[in-house]
Image 1 (cartoon, rainbow, N blue to C red):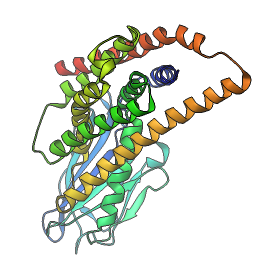
Image 2 (cartoon, rainbow, N blue to C red):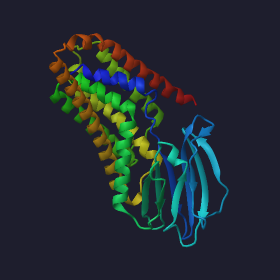
Image 3 (cartoon, rainbow, N blue to C red):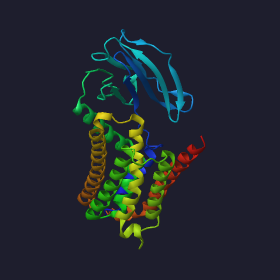
Image 4 (tube, one colour):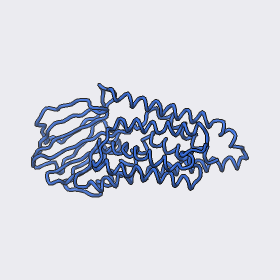
Length: 335
């Protein structure tokens, strides 16, 4: 009976979330070019091709803009570039993001200095500003990328739906552990390779294939348990598609880049964050299933029959939503 409940979770996820992978933080980069000068890059999530989130960088009064602001829409973001100047550098300067208190988006900030060291910070609606410390902070990098990894997986609804499908197909506790472990190892490999830029693949086809992987699993579920590779060895499917999902995770890192002096720490922290979020999701699904199962036992309600009746409708619902994601992402190829 363990194999039926995750379908309920799948349907709730597919109905509740109309779009996948909507977690897109804003990104502010300040790259030092001389003692007093910095190149500023401000990347804000876009809403369509002509609108952007109303987020604006607020700098101290003694910071002077030395070049005209240049902005344009690129992909799903609005990017502004300019150069700024502050006597003695930015150490001790307070950076604020106007409008951040009204949205749920995070802002990742990176300051790149001439000596190769960097500083990172993560801002949100409850913390809209920070003071530049002026020295490299290893644990700040770890904390920033760890939290980013957790938030990325928990807001990556396509990844979560894929994992939920794996839980259903695996069925037993032992098979779930083996299957999810295979998925974890596979996407960790490609995430690391892509994060280190050892392998580069175009993101739109990868994202479309990730959505298609959910369609594949939903179809397997809809056709019921059969003597196929997917049902006999779900780890083979989880590991194969896990390689693709790793490139999807890496695309999030490409949006914010990695601090050059702390690449291993940032990459490892992001990877651990993704795994922690994934473990939390799997544990939540299984715990919820156990609680409902115990409730059925206490109330002496027969749960198998009605779960079997909604099995196919839920699989078709998940597959339909994933197919819409696939077509949406394929359409991006021609934009």
